[in-house]
Length: 100
Image 1: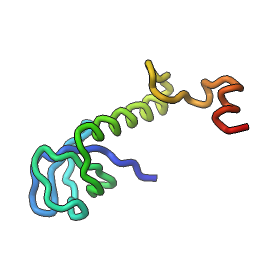
Image 2: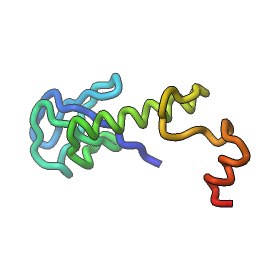
Image 3: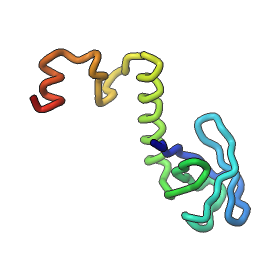
Image 4: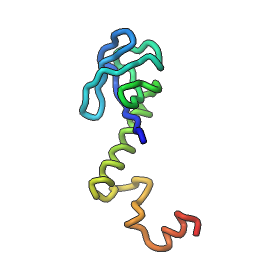
């Protein structure tokens, strides 16, 4: 499985761009999305930009990735995360989730 990471273009150079996102700076292949400019947001899979996204979408994806990271680290979701881990659900919630 491959997870897309939102990255913002810092500097464009032909088919490649220097991008930053989630604490990393990487050289990204932009051949699939065409010409990019500094400030553009891209959804990146394995160092290849697959989609142009706007700032709102980048924020949404980053928030979802933060939830996944928190779940992997065993943290409970805060406020209205939109989901609960199955291990934290009651039997009634599990039945509703699975349709049983």
